[in-house]
Length: 167
Image 1 (cartoon, rainbow, N blue to C red):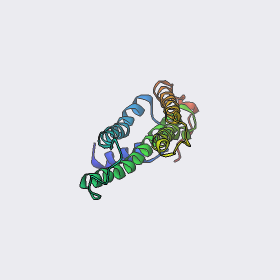
Image 2 (image 1 turned 135 degrees about the horizontal axis):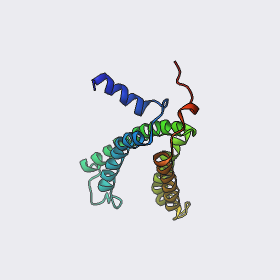
Image 3 (image 1 turned 90 degrees about the vertical axis):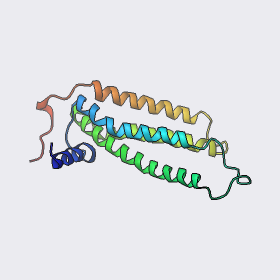
Image 4 (image 1 turned 90 degrees about the horizontal axis):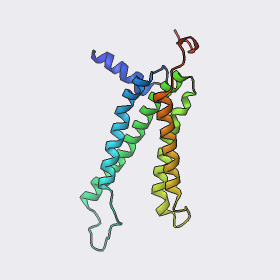
């Protein structure tokens, strides 16, 4: 496969919402953005501080803290890019199933809401219930599981019922 064909395939899979994908092709195309997001998240958990910094004992400007925060900035942007790429892959599969492609945004949205709940709850000074992150996690898991089952195991729509490709 030439470079231009690879670039066109990458653009089709991860940067365009038009088109359709079968279940096997969807699963294979999902490996890259999901894998990158998982690896980056494991690194983020590994380097996350476990307690607030004690500025009475530690220097205010610490190169390790600067590097950690720089990673978190890059991590946030990379997660958004991975979520967008996964949206486009799932939108094609939802279209192949005859379902609204907009459903592809539900799983990334719920994952981001669960992550925000984990960040916000300890900082809410008691405003958010302690169970909020776990409820959001459960909802995110249900939506992700439904997406995987629906897109991975659901049949494609018959060819005669698919919308025609624009010429």
